[in-house]
Length: 217
Image 1 (cartoon, rainbow, N blue to C red):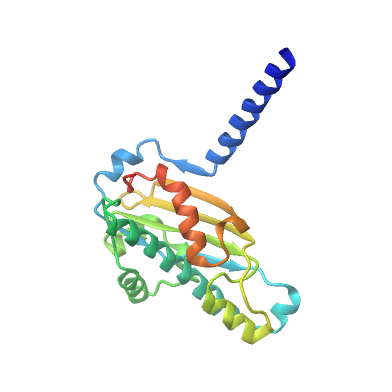
Image 2 (cartoon, rainbow, N blue to C red):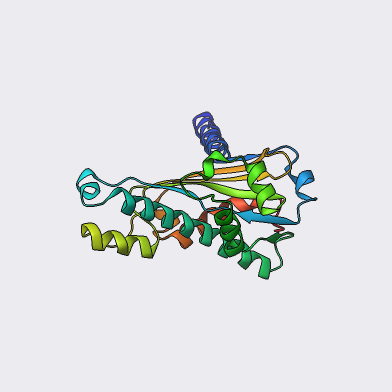
């Protein structure tokens, strides 16, 4: 009986440790909910994308082609994030508005901000340029492109078609007024998340949204 009780206790201890580790993927500012009450408009930035190709694949690509591939991958993640939030907005689960990514990217372009230099600007500076209350951005790291367009482009160049799901995605939300990090979600990509950009972002955000004050479950 004692052996069974000990085994059961050990199981729950391991389960608690697992849940704790899972929670560590998400950082939430202690006053995010309070700060979020004053937010009305949020912008989703193009994500910084890093596509780690094999040396033989890299040999067949120019620096410009690689730059375009990663920029388009970052835009695909931005678009997937917008689609996710707009869908939740239509379901009346979102309490704020999101700036159109078309508007966001146009304003960034007018200020000569692009994938190559956007990390030289603070979240506070970007929020001021975009005239929003907060900005969402992050890093998308993968060994192959996830978006259909980027995957097809790579196939034409190096003979690879289709997309895999190995890498990591980090999503940050920063307050526009002072640039403070309000929310961060980091997830290692796995087969359970899907193999294309939209599916991956939808799965990730669905799992993390319970700790996002913008969303009313």
